[in-house]
Amino acid sequence: MKNRKSNKGILIKILIFSLVVLSLLLLVMALIHIKTQETEKETSEITEVESSESSEVISSVPESEEETDIVAYPAPQYDFTCEEVTIKIPGMSEEYTFAWVSDLHMITDLAPAEDVMPGNEETIQFRYEFFSTPDGMRSVELWPEVVNFLNYGDFDGVIFGGDMLDYYSNSNLKAFMQEFEKLNSEVPVLYIRADHDYGYWYGGEVLKETDTHALHKTIDKDDINDKYWEFDDFIIIGVNNSTKDMQQEQLDLILSLYEKNKKIIMVTHVPYASMIDESLKALSMEVRQKVYYWGGGDYVPNAVTKAYLDKVYAEDTNICQVLAGHLHAQWDGMLTQQVSQHIFTPGYMGTIGIIHVVGEETGNE
Picture 1 (cartoon, one colour):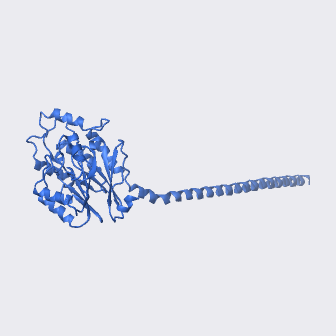
Picture 2 (picture 1 turned 90 degrees about the vertical axis):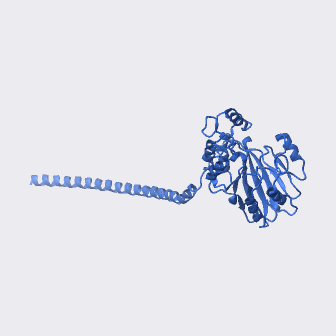
Picture 3 (picture 1 turned 180 degrees about the vertical axis):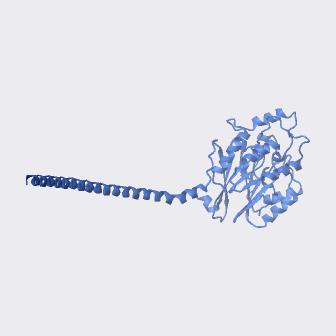
């Protein structure tokens, strides 16, 4: 009887112990469950935040893709002088901005070159040093910076006004082309040549003028039929190879454009004589020691060139502005009561022209 009571007591103790253990186990499981729910809640909140941030990133992808379509051109490191000209066209509602570069006179042939004859080294070295900015940057060093300036700016077109090369050589053309090909292809370029672009003076019998003309075609086709831009209210016409008399083919093209009765901006390397302002002659004699424009000195027009100039000087002319280089000095004035002329400072001095074409009312505001 005593053993039965003893066994019964042991069973009761075991039962109580089991209940206690079970209670503790249930408590632990409850605590784990609560902790798990809190963790899941925090994880859910983090996931929502990350999802929101991810959504913001995803939504910005199209903008990023659009931005990659815009080429970021480097800013020029050289501090160019900007020479600004404003041309007013009556009744025009839009505005245009063009860049002008001329008379860079780039030279690369400081080492012996296969298309530069021996004996010209001293002359080439002198010209290399002469054509430099006031702070000593040579034209060949300046050319890449010119391209950076043109690409970095917001221009409707770029005009190269002649004498970009000091003379034709394969190395000069190669250096020119190396940077020319970096120009923004979406911006049109009008390149009118002059005697230095085509000139092969240091090439002896290696080159002929027909060769240099053909090689220039590899740059931009160099076709006089393409040397103009027509807009709704005006036309820009380039006179190619203006150090020589005009060819009949070029005159015919100009006259056909003239008949459109739009205002015309003539772009030429060699400027024209003023009929009313003697200051141009005085400047020319000071800078060049001779008359250095069409209408005097070495530039006496033949019949074809005179027929063209008659259109420039006519009282009822459609031409409102002439832009030129060649003089290596700035001049701004009137050719007649109807026609303005601006001669740009040479590019080798670190100057780039900025041409604003605006409406008459816009220009007066």
